[in-house]
Image 1 (cartoon, rainbow, N blue to C red):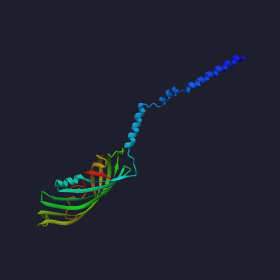
Image 2: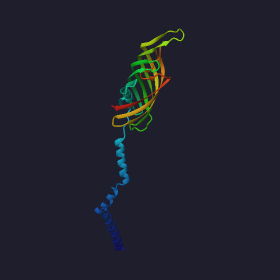
Image 3: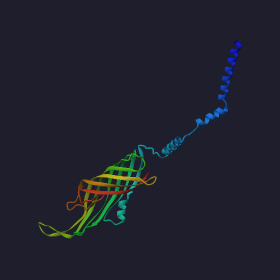
Length: 250
């Protein structure tokens, strides 16, 4: 009885040893390792997408550089010989790719000859505007839809000459009107809406429309200037304008 029990225990231990040896053979290890290293198509696609996103994602700082540029429309009007035009440059700062404080500096000029009385108006003077734009586009890809405000100011001297004599309707008599070097100044406010796109790494093109309203104006008692540098023509209580800008990031 004891020998039978001994043989049974020995056979059980031998079977257990063979099972352990089989589990540790190289063949089994080779069979397991490939299953642990399988990469699915989904994993590969996700890995590539993460790398591409990291490559093109723009890191936003508080100050994201600055830009300088010019208004192409004004220079084009001068080249085409318009009787009024402006030459304007600008600079701005990019804060959080959301807020854009901006300063615009230019020279406005007009040399206009009227049709009815053969009158001539002439002015040339500097102007400036300061303000800020807000970018409504949530994506930081260089394309922007903006809205903003500007405060503008110009101090100028203008000449007005009327060749045909003016007749006094009460006292009679007539005389030529020759106003030379009349002093004027104007403060105004602008509401601006614009679009901008990045056409190259540091190059942007943008355009905007503006509605302008005078805050205050000093003019000669003899007559209203036909054109105010930076503001525009004075044929109404408000003035519409616009620009087409070429900008360079710096």
